[in-house]
Length: 294
Image (cartoon, rainbow, N blue to C red; front, side, top):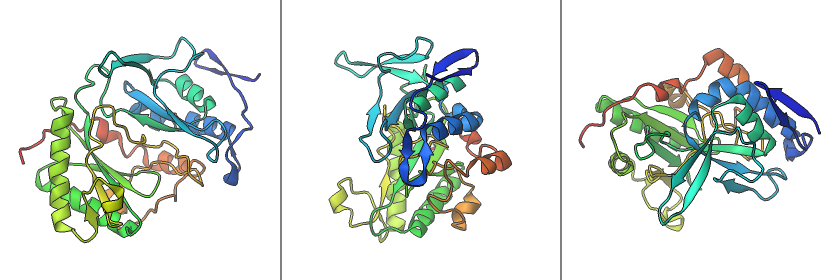
């Protein structure tokens, strides 16, 4: 069995030639390599956060599953965090705060990384308010960008800065970093009011309807992701979709010009962009803001 030495830890690697994205010829080896190369950009957004992963041991065409609890047989050096979910139920989450943890996750065929919106030590207070723009069948990417700009401008009118990223699928997510003084309910209520205002401005292309069948094919303004234990794909996380797209932070200029389309940046071609532009989502971890009353 091949091994890889990472930060003085010897990791056993298995089935490195397993095709995870068969149509693209991408192997588990390619996933591990990507995690190693993307680690400087990816790790800051995982550090100190309970992590949910989506695993595809047989590749994206096989059965995938979400995993919260640390699996049996995991190395004892993994950092973990026990979280109570009520009624005596406790989940032992992985905290991905090191390169060796990322490599281990890659070997576990974790194709998607979903950190919590809050950090260890302040699990009841989210670090961000998030807006998840989820296009339905009648939505276009132009609709997504139009609505994203509308949210940006609404928040700018409240003296707030926010940051966009492609989900890695067809949608976009907008992060509003906030100070550690709000509950998840307060974050959700704020997001809901902003989404209501956007929907009033764009009723023809947006919906707040929770039931998929009643959305009329419109762009869903999802504010319910602002909840304890809810997660979104991390910046730079791969997605288990054809082409191996990644969840990609954008500039607002790129959004306004529709300069980058979903799926354009993938596990195979995103590194030069990161090396050129750095982590466009770094301010999300630093620019903590106060929410005004609405």
